[in-house]
Image (cartoon, rainbow, N blue to C red; front, top):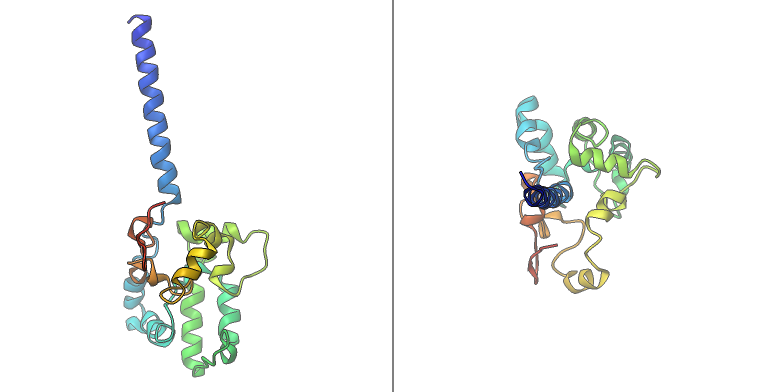
Length: 191
């Protein structure tokens, strides 16, 4: 091979390396791991489906049923201990139901499962107090940092950060893939 061939191969290698880096960087920032996608299905098999079905019925009747991996167990314990004042609402449950839901939430929490998003949530909490809300995690703020307060003001009648399925079209199935985001009034989100 002559010197020109080596330069051409080196250039081709660099182009491929840069392209691969872009794909990997996009993959790392992509919610498309479908990390949560099997939770509701998996849990429907446990205890005849009582835990996730109860969660969807009790919690999902008032708000989006957030996947437990968005918060550590301590956050879920605190939340379930104060259901009489659940973000300004009384969400008290029978002791048996509260106990079953607490078990479901803590056994699927960010600090008890080994999954990419849960690990990122826990990493984002390494220097902070236990959050009371998902929106208080540095992970959540990082993933939504491109959404300006001005944009949120504009769409506030249609969506908020507390209803994931307002923008994440497959959130209920556990998919937060950035390619499946559609912001009301704006359409498909592309960052």
